[in-house]
Amino acid sequence: MSNATMWIHGFHAVEAAFDEGSVVQVWLNDQRLDKRAQAFLNRIQDKKIPVNMVNQKMLETKVGEARHQGIAAEVRVQPAKNENHLHDLLETNSAPFLLILDGVTDPHNVGACLRSAEAFGVDAVIVPKDRACGLTPIVRKISSGSSERVPFIEVTNLARTIDDLKERGVWLAGLAGEATETIYQANLTGALAIIMGSEGEGMRRLTREACDFLLKIPMEGRIESLNVSVATGAVLSESHRQRITKRK
Image (cartoon, rainbow, N blue to C red; front, side, top):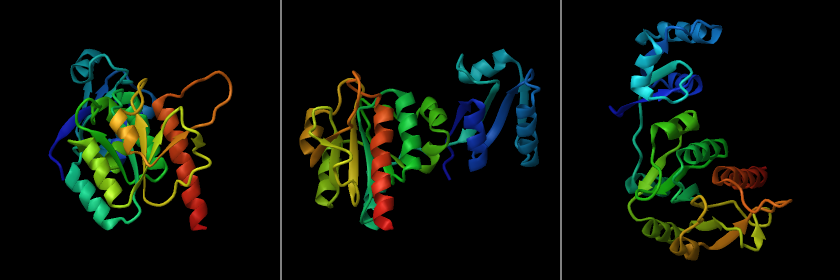
């Protein structure tokens, strides 16, 4: 088990960490006397986890001025994985379902993408080490525990990783607004990596050129694009639907 710890905040995130068994200690605002706080306190005390009743200023020494809802917790965390973990995954899984985030920098988007990845059966999320968002406290909070359950792999050279995936028979599908094929027309089953580009700029040129095919999400109205986490949820959901249908 990793010895690394970090502070998270907000009831949903802390409760998810508690359910995962990763909470080391809890700090609770001494003004929180409501039923939700009391019920959670009872659960914590049953597990003999240290609880510190503190004031607002003390809480802010751990989480700043974030919307903490009066609760913060120190939790054990799994660090990001590396290329070795990806290699092991590919050795044991002949049809991996992967999500690649090419330079997504907003931690809220990365956290939301991790939630979608878990919900729709993604085996691992891959990101470049540089010019991208890693496993920050905000990412872990927004992911509601998915960051601890879905392997988050940081790679030194994304282009090389993509080449390795192709050599292993993994198909690469990139989302691009100018694509002619929609996510509902493509075969999104089997060994597949969905590639999502950064906010505003999309995929980098080399990443786009490495894709086996490009896809778009058909939309109505005057909206030209979706938030990257919303778009990720849409394409992962369609791939998941196809995979379930194929298994029946």
